[in-house]
Length: 138
Image (cartoon, rainbow, N blue to C red; front, side):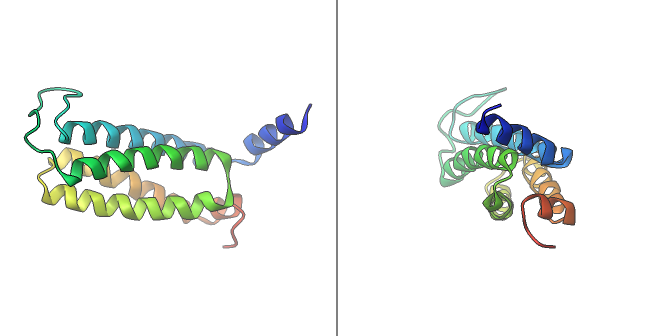
């Protein structure tokens, strides 16, 4: 095998299943944020929408968070040392965004999803096994 192929195989072998799961959760969170951001901006994604009645900073904020969460999912899969810190920072930003989304009138279900996935990821990222997988000391 070539060197790059060995690096990919080594990454798959070292990565705990939980990191793969949070990477997938991050990708799901990103998609949810993208769809929610589009809906806030007035684009109907699913269901009835109110076209251009709530164009706000919250919509753009949510859309940008979606793109960032998708990036975090890719970083988790790569097990880069910076991915852990990047993930923790984005979790914090997402929780702040969910809080302001609540102030802007998000429904409870939207806010619950926007908060629960980041909280699950934060709890898992702080476990000893995960920190060592990213090359961090406990």
